[in-house]
Length: 443
Image: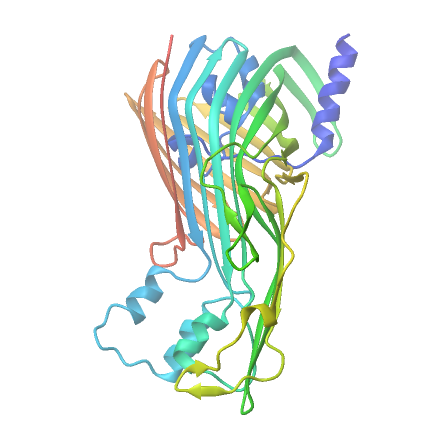
């Protein structure tokens, strides 16, 4: 049996399958999210369920997080330096060089903004078992760069790409987590690393039931407009999927797709995660967390396939200043929206591998992995003094980011808050924010 457990542990270490991990506490955010080795009790449900198996640390056997949340807002173009330079001076006259430099801040792929919030109103851990109730909502929107160029450069005789992209989803989750100690005082030899002497090894996992609140997914969207002396030609198409829609016949006999006013869940699904943690004899803790191994929602209520296109045909002349000749919508557009039985959305499978150590009042940790299909690396450190817990961290995921956290209390009553940057390490270069907080107690 012992050999079997060892094989299971090694297999999990070698899987290297990616798993989504979100900061659900202020102090965890303050560590740059390098927190999967330190999370205990009700926090371990979110960060690392294997840590529920550590039962000999003096941590309360019963812990409750009354709330925990994480809010993230970000975009890819505008920072404080840009705002101060071009938008604070009254009656500022922009030169062509100013316009070129300002527009160069917007990537060729367009202006992108995103939003995500994770809220848990109750999470409970008792010994090796944990349960949490949470809701996650996220949205992103990409607008073409041309929309920013035209107000400054004017319309030119060329073809513009106005194609937008956008997605949104909201899901509530009930998660049951479990962690167990499977080995004590064991040595493991790993290639390229050598022999590691563990005082304790734990395995853990979680299973979530997902209640889909609503979703809107863009599969393909195009919008092109050509301006010339002959007039304007425009054409485009949209294809996507969504819930909470219905087809309604209008007075003229046409059908329009509209949102349902009465709210009801749009689907359901499941999520599954695995984790392993090990305490080395030298005081270090190693953790491997795989989340979203099986993570999907089947949307089967009020599900729609959205399929629309339009083409103005021959160039349409300008009739007057800034106006086009009147167009008949039925002549230039086509609506093929239809009800469908169901469709499925899933979250990317991601990974965290971390190592951390507590040395007196000081804790420090580092992690690497993948999140949202992006490479991730993070470093964090924290200092505990009296009832205060201070932390600072660095995280790299498509940009350099810094974060800070403060906690007040002890293992039995604890509140924290954290703040992090998005897309920059200084106030001037920052392109977004992340905030998180938790209130928990235990006995």
